[in-house]
Image (cartoon, rainbow, N blue to C red; front, top):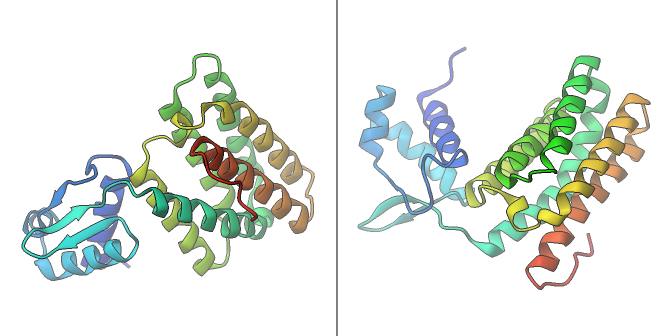
Length: 219
């Protein structure tokens, strides 16, 4: 079944926000998007309302819809939310991550390790995003998966690179990825995988908080 026009509009705009094609402050002209998709403005308006609810778009009277500016509080809350729900998604997905997917995750982490010598935070962040997507994308609970995907999209829209703010975190992150992969390779229990994934996320969150001069999270 082909996606609805509203879903197509949502996918198009959220992807362009995520990859930076629509930068913060960019004005979203509903009629132009509708023309590109070959539909009326009604499904585009529905998509914009969804993105507004997710914090990715602002709608101002007499101005219209614009891509949301970076909001430090929203960024922090999104990271805190992912620290709680993404480890659960990873643990639930673990039995469904086949050998091919594990091999791909190993390959990506090796690339991340190679990036450390001449550190490029944007490239490293892109690889990091793909690494984690591989680990949670098989989560069989669609509600948890949707929340995790929303969180990652929101982070991408607000920061081209998280690691430009915490570059010292990169090397430790690669080693924590390796530990997660070893647990998956060894068919570790869901509890062990969730614990390792949560420790990894908490360490990233606390590195961000420290860099921002804030207290470590109790999560």
